[in-house]
Length: 292
Image (tube, rainbow, N blue to C red; front, top):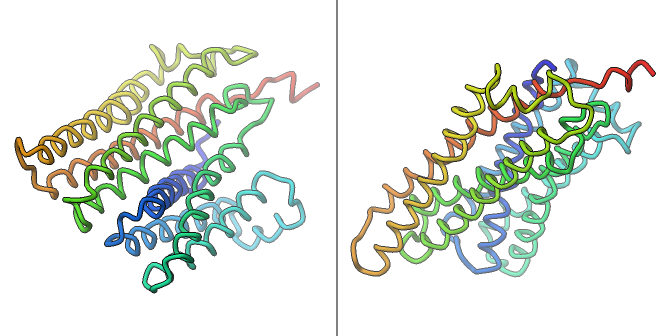
C-alpha cells in the first residue's frame, strides 16, 4: 500500500504529544518538573496542533473534515474527537501552568496524561481492518503507544536536563525516559512478531521482506539500529552517568545528558517513521475479502 504521509506525520506528532503529557502527568503526581511544566505542555500542544492539521489535509479538501460528524462511529471521527478533547484539556493545562492553582493544575495534568495514553491507541485502532492482516492486531495500536511514550519522554527528559532542576529531578526524568524506550522496544517487537504470525500469509506481507528481502535495509538499519539500539544505549548511558554523578563518583554536565536525550529522541523518531513506512508496505489486502 502507498504510504499516506499526512496520516503518518499525524500519528508520529500525536505520539510525541501523548508521551509528553504522560511524562508531565507523572511529574504532577510526583510534584516534579515545575520549571519546565509550561514549556513542555506548550511544546506538546504545538505538536498536537500541527499533527491535527496534517490529518485534515490528508482529505485533500480540509472542509471535508466536517463530513466526519455524520459518521461518529468511524475511526477517523474517534480520532477527531479525541484530538479535539485533548486540545481543549491541553490549552487549560498550559494556562494553569502559569497560574497558582496547584489542585486544578494537577487534575488537568493527570487528565492530559490519561488522554495521552488514549490518543495513539485510538489512532492505531483505525487501522484494524480484517482485509489487511498485517494491521489487524492489537499489537499495532500498542506499537503506536510505545513509540509515543518513548519520543515524548525522551524529549521532556532532555528539556528537564536543559532547562529544569536537573540536579534534583534529572535522574527521575532519565528513568522515565528509559521506561518509555523499553516500552517502545517491546511493543515494536510485538508488532514484528504479529507480522510473522498474521493469518492469510502472502509474499507481499511476509516477515521475510523485513529479515532479508526488499525491506531488510530499512528494517535492520532504520528500525533496529537507529530506532531501537541507539536510543536504548544513549538513555542507559545517560542513566549510568547520572547515577555516578549522584553518588559523588563523578559529575556529568546536565547539558551533555540533555544532548544524549535529544539525539535519542531524534533516533526514535526516525525509527518510528521507518517502521510506519514498513507498516504501509505490508498493508496489502486479502483478495477474497474484497471480491467475495
